[in-house]
Length: 232
Image 1 (cartoon, rainbow, N blue to C red):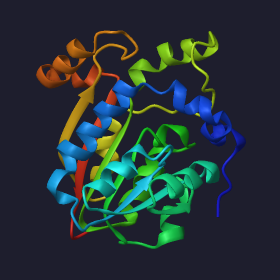
Image 2 (image 1 turned 180 degrees about the vertical axis):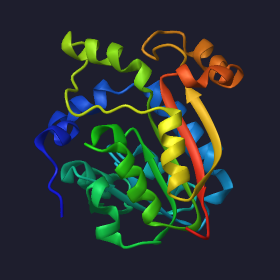
Image 3 (image 1 turned 90 degrees about the horizontal axis):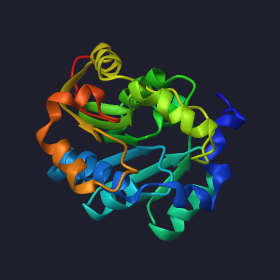
Image 4 (image 1 turned 60 degrees about the horizontal axis):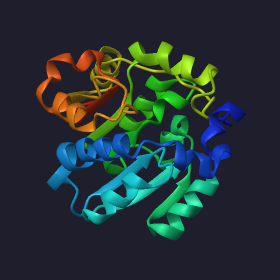
C-alpha cells in the first residue's frame, strides 16, 4: 500500500487554521451543486463514499439526506472530529488506494470535493473512485480549474493563504476523458465562480453560476456528475 508524502498531509497539519481559511460561500455553493442539485433524491438509503472528507461538511449533508456514509481521508485527526461531531462511519484511506482497501463495486455513490488536486496523480484518484463504484452508481466530484493555478500559486507564495501542499489542478476535458475511459457516462457538468469567491460579490457570483454556464470552462471550480456503466 502506498504511503502518502508529508506534503499530502498539509490540511492535517493546518489544524484549526484549515477551518478558518475556508470560504463559507465556496463551501456552501459546492454543497448545493454536488449534493443538492447533482445527487438530490438519489441519496436516500444509498451507500455513499466520501473521498477526502476534510472537516466533514459533505458527509454531514449526505447523512442528513438519508445516505449511509463512509467518510475517508488520510488525516486521522480530521476523521476523529467527523466521528465525534457527525457520527458517520470513517476510515483512514488514501485516495490512490481505494480499490485495494475496499475492493471493487462497493458503493452506490462516490463523492469527492476538492480532494484529487492534493494527490500526486489526480486522474488515478478518479479511476480509483470509479473502481469502488457499483455499476449503475453515481460519481460526483469537484476540483479547481488549472486555468486558475497561476493566481492560486501566486497567492500562496505571497502568503495570502496558509496552504502549501500538493495542488495539481485539472480541466473539464481531462476529467471527461478519464471518466469516459473508465466506463462512466457524464450526466452533468457545472462551473462555479467566474471570479474569485473571496471578493464580496456573492450575489453576482451566484447569478453567474446560474446564468453563465456557457463560460464554465474558465470558471474556478469544475463540478462533474457521472454514472458508471454496467459493462465496464
